[in-house]
Figure (cartoon, rainbow, N blue to C red):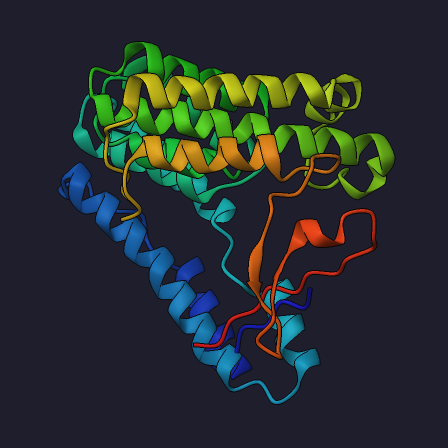
Length: 286
């Protein structure tokens, strides 16, 4: 899929030069102020990028900008980690570590942030955002361990629910990754570290799916009434949707019966066509 953003080279280069020339944070600034300044520095760099991107004339220019000039969170991670290490007891340390854990991908800085959060701040009510992010991340052992630590040690039920739900999603996703790695390992070489790549190559996708179902069932049992932060009901209703899909809509399962009317107003059911090749096109118009 072609990634398209839109931002004039002079503006971008100027913004990059200014970001590189930013002086260290003055010692008299509080940790909270230093954190806000770092976050603003990253946000400003992104805003300047998009300004330049929108002025690009061709898809080639836009793609080149996206590939070479988009401000990557990884390049800012070390500064946030340094702030957390310098002020480990300050609330800003948690903010800095959460920023790294939610913005940086496939980088030692992210792994270090997860380690420190699990070791020193696992009871914080701010790490729910990290749990939600990890659901869509690569299924690494470190990420799985972090989610289990939060489930076991965080006193906030909503945070526990987020960790449990994300662990279930990660297990479900890992099944697909494991199947993909077995068939086309070269396609996953850049997205996964060598340890995770090897683990998924040897893993049983069915075992991951079983683990995902068991964890979704735990979500329903222990956190079914907890509202989600997505505005989509409760974690229990979300888990039920995933379980229905896993048990009824995967390859090899009998499709649920569908009833409706064709273009001529004639009623029909999917089961009427059992044994025949059927193409179903779901579409909508808003």
